[in-house]
Length: 316
Image (cartoon, rainbow, N blue to C red; front, side, top):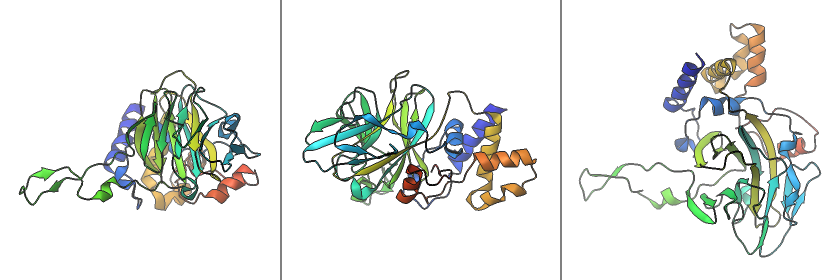
């Protein structure tokens, strides 16, 4: 029963992707039921230690906030600087949120994961996360993927549109019709890292849209840390661990809850209490599934960082 429901949910996400006015909408990649349940589940407490930047594994040019959830790079010329999370993972599916304003990135702004041996400072302006064999990173300004000091290609991977050449009659062509297709996308402030340590993959979610696997064949059974690197003075970067799950398939109750959640759609999420369901199930739906919005901003993150307020973060 659980397998059949998983296939149904995957088919639904493939054939009927959620409506979105985002520029990333056409780049959406269907998610597995395991990832869909995790993305739509309530996030953990914002004071979880997995939300902390490391006070040890960071460049001295990165200043750590008292709550450890934000780092700020000091002005420093001809220096590339990185920082890792305090807690790494060896197994399971995990989602982190990184808050990094596009106006505070400059060049060589990278988000990804690393092993413990990834260098965290070097002279000059370089990509650190992805600059060696111990790390994998997405350079946000150019949209390029980096690993082992090499560019692996653009991300997200854009689908080429079929067009027709006037000179060749009705012969189809897959070449981009304009240079706009090659222009890097502006990546917003909020980016989610999706690390499946069991499958050895890393992907990203932007504006509520899963953009697919960016890296595969990551080492299994090895501790991996969310990480960033920057060359811009004054860049402030926030980290929050949102959720995770084991390699086991989602429970049947979770799959059913996700199915109901998706069927209601964005406009009817406040009508869960009107469903003909026992109170226990209604409470489960309200407390475990959330329709994600895009209201999260730097002020909200700061409130969580200083522990003045606590409300469940929207994941995407």
